[in-house]
Length: 264
Image (cartoon, rainbow, N blue to C red; front, side, top):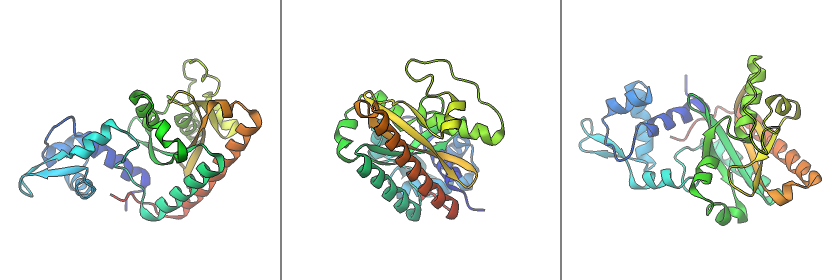
């Protein structure tokens, strides 16, 4: 059976995570670190080689592998050129819907996938519009937290946790109270409202997140980053929520209909 979207992303991330610093690794070492069979690790490695993220050192069959210079730069500069991509047909739908959401709200639209064990949320697609320059000059630590973080870190992860808990009939414990975000990240409240709103990892922005579904699986979240001074307006925030829900619905229906595969 072909790998689904979440499996493909997890395996790609696992192979990339096998590389630490400037290490040159044999295929067997990569497979062991990634927790994958060697043929599977080799297949994903070849995709990363074609994408320019990994390079082969030495002869085919006996050489080692290492991250390319551009991949090292990408690790330090999230959002510039992510190694994780959605298959072409779905990428067009996702991209179109995020651009539409960004244009209609004037804010920033992001799509997160749930990856890894324990699960994290990682950005795979976005539409920043006129805010790109401002957002990408934010402190590096804030950008990295926006790019990927544990599911208990913010609104985008919270909606994934909240709706997974409804599927398993297990109530996730309340996180320890945190300034400004504790009430917004109450999982039961998120389930009732269908979305989460809380301070974004980047200062000056609010995140409005809605779960993304693939059939009966919560695959990630669609998130709108709204400037704080605009999100404080109750009526405007309600309009933002409606638009994010509409976008998440369109993408979820597409993911449910189509057998989505990772491009690599």
